[in-house]
Figure 1 (cartoon, rainbow, N blue to C red):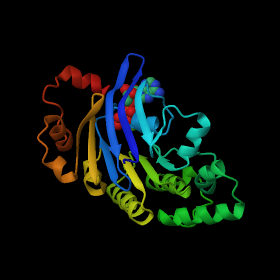
Figure 2 (cartoon, rainbow, N blue to C red):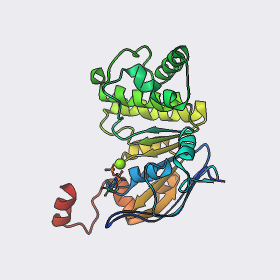
Figure 3 (spheres, rainbow, N blue to C red):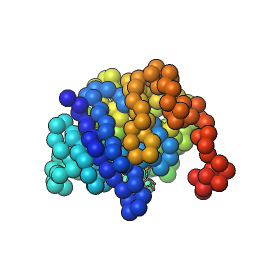
Length: 257
Ligand SMILES: Nc1ncnc2c1ncn2[C@@H]1O[C@H](COP(=O)(O)OP(=O)(O)OP(=O)(O)O)[C@@H](O)[C@H]1O
Ligand SMILES: [Mg+2]
């Protein structure tokens, strides 16, 4: 049985239809990467899964349990099992690194300050930033912020990690570092991994399977080798970085705006 299951999921914001019919499985222990153009609904998918957004129709199951009908309290229980690295890292600027990493732990239970110290220190070491508890988000580089966000996500010892654009905006060295960390976390902590990214190099490096979404549904799922060999033109265009053939200048100008 899949750990995460989307079946016939629909989601619109007013007239804007994001998902017409989304079907997707995430298998326990795998690393699945979701690719697709900007605005295709990748972030929305992750938010539907953790119940931050409500679907209009269809079923979303986490470990066999329907998420869409859960109460807020039940959802909070599910979220405890899931770590999420939000797009843009999203650290609290008014909190120190220690408090940022401790944030989820405080929400989840009643740890003592000594326990917090221990877990925060471990989590920061894990992401290669030991001893920076006292620093503030404003003092960190973009790559460090992402890693602190990651430390916060793993501090709660989740069984699934959702990463929304973990490498966007990072230089090549930090990109490699984050990719390695994602793989390392998956291997050593046995975490099921869902990564949303535009970055095909990352996708090929970290994925067991890659899924492409386009105009409201999944148009391709396969291993990195299968996607490299795919003949579906929209998949080819995406992985080769081509703009769609039929796109004229007007469309380009609109989508660039
Ligand atoms: N809370 C919201 N209210 C209204 N529209 C929304 C909301 N969240 C997302 N959308 C719209 O849904 C569509 C999909 O958004 P989403 O953020 O999932 O795209 P994405 O695939 O993550 O894009 P990107 O790669 O740029 O991050 C977009 O058209 C967006 O404007
Ligand atoms: Mg997004």
